[in-house]
Length: 238
Image (cartoon, rainbow, N blue to C red; front, side, top):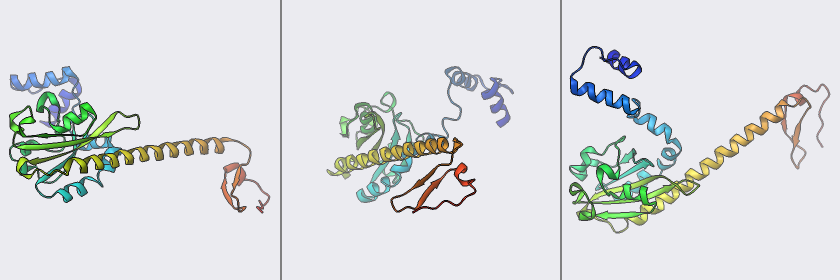
């Protein structure tokens, strides 16, 4: 069966024949250009690695502070759930479908706080019947956006809890966590940019034929390119 699947995703060949409904579904996916690897959560996390790595330190703190009746999630800018802390089953029916890789978009799940935060770029809390979809009327959803350096929405941190466990401090807490994650992502981007600039400069220095050395204020040698290393006479720094 796996080889048959590989033949279809790679060449579009349905062998052996499959039921008509299944065949139409597969053909539709191929026609729309659906990425057959897109459901692999490890690939999704790699795509948003910078976001996941920074948020990893904050999500457990938020969830443990709020307690076992709260579920904390991280989504990327497309609404794909990248990480979950807490037990989604405490949310009842809604929690059964909340998992890593799930897609939360307004077109499918209505105005959850996390979908609203992604769209509006602002922190928001939605309580009970404020949710458009009846399935969420016994829940409170809260969310705050995580912003990229250019101000665009990079992702969001969201919290779900049953309405009887409403906590007035949730929104302030996740707004603070989202800002900390935003700052962390920015710092990582700056560090990466500096690292690339250093590698570029190093490549230039190493490519010149003349010897090049760097000396600090105390007269200590801190850098020497390959050409300088081939010099036969001793280098004396004072």
